[in-house]
Image 1 (cartoon, one colour):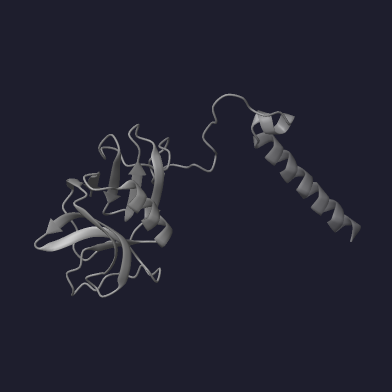
Image 2: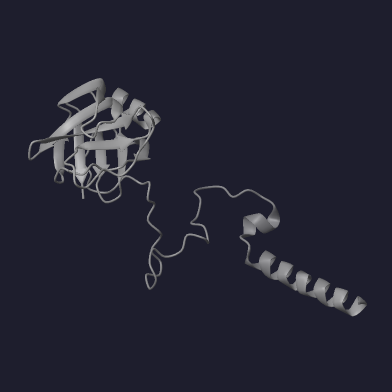
Length: 184
């Protein structure tokens, strides 16, 4: 029994040594690093076979999404960013796209409604409309019941749904004529 305990302690000691040898100098010495943070060891390549490329931050504002104060809506990412005039992201959040989506491009908020029944029959609030596609009005809204279910693909609806707190933020931010940039 003593032999097994000694072997286990030796193995733990060896592993502890390896961990400390691989640790950054500031962690080994107990001092705090100064200057800008370096990439973490856990930030691996973005794809297998792509050494040296950092992983893409899924919450980062997409490149080529316009400039100035705007709402950015990424269709593929199912995400919205509220961006101030200096290009700083004030808020980002996931959305559930509508059955009908606008083509990529720059639009403007055309109208707003505090509370209405959506084209899918759900009671919604903070409706911010910005596009029309083949007669279907497209806009952001939040279901009063908090739901964000997928739209019925057989119905041509234009409501891009979000959580109620995100709907509140978008309502405050996106007034009539505010730019909305839709990207693929």
